[in-house]
Image 1 (tube, protein in one colour):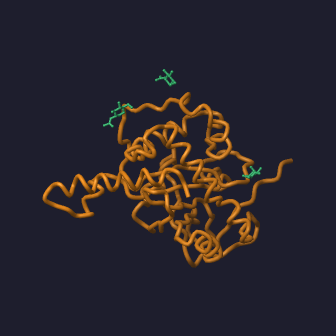
Image 2: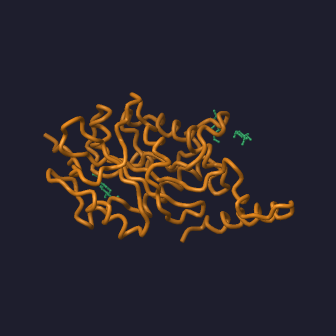
Image 3: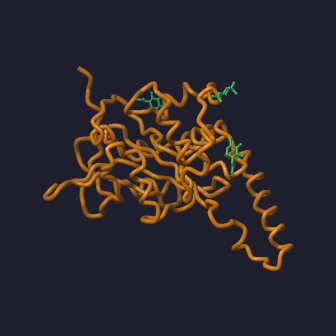
Length: 248
Ligand SMILES: *[C@@H]1O[C@H](CO)[C@@H](O)[C@H](O)[C@H]1NC(C)=O
Ligand SMILES: *[C@@H]1O[C@H](CO)[C@@H](O)[C@H](O)[C@H]1NC(C)=O
Ligand SMILES: *[C@@H]1O[C@H](CO)[C@@H](O)[C@H](O)[C@H]1NC(C)=O
């Protein structure tokens, strides 16, 4: 399905063979401590993000937040972000991975690269800035969250959905469980706001289930104010999928 899978597999075999030369020969050792086993492709709904962070956007598509390995953070602080290495994909980055706080600034990409990209780069298939960002764009298009929701009649609207509506649409299409996150209301609130959706893949970029709680920590990733209110949506509360304000 994608050209990078074979090299991922070869790497796995190479590591296993080397370890088998020692006195332990266990697949448990195939991924040494600290190496990630899962990538989380995270997309957010710009309207919800901007309601939390006080920005303004007229974007009506889900956009990328990040591509995060399940372990590791700031793995190589001397590997600096250099925008000129991804010059050829910047126009597309601006469309699907915009910095909603500071449009036309590379700050968000720099932040994501330093925090997560340098860890993802442990894998040969992602061991350059260009490979990392291109892979995120590739997965974004491949999974096509915008169409999956739309085709299942989950569209931004003034009416509410159940979490089950959203979950079923995604699970039926991807055949794995994504993680769906909402902004929760304050005390006495009646609905939660759909905010972020995570889709998980293994080291060969094949879909796998996201788990509910273990990576909750990453949800705070971009909250500049440090008070991200996103967490896994509540099964029993109506889900609001905020429409794009009409231009006047
Ligand atoms: C959303 O994405 C689709 C296809 O990727 C594009 O045609 C459309 O213009 C985008 N819509 C908005 C509001 O950005
Ligand atoms: C960290 O990144 C620098 C710059 O790309 C590289 O030279 C160095 O080998 C990396 N260190 C590790 C431990 O990967
Ligand atoms: C960024 O990458 C370009 C292209 O490879 C290179 O010419 C330039 O020196 C790099 N800039 C820095 C600050 O490393």
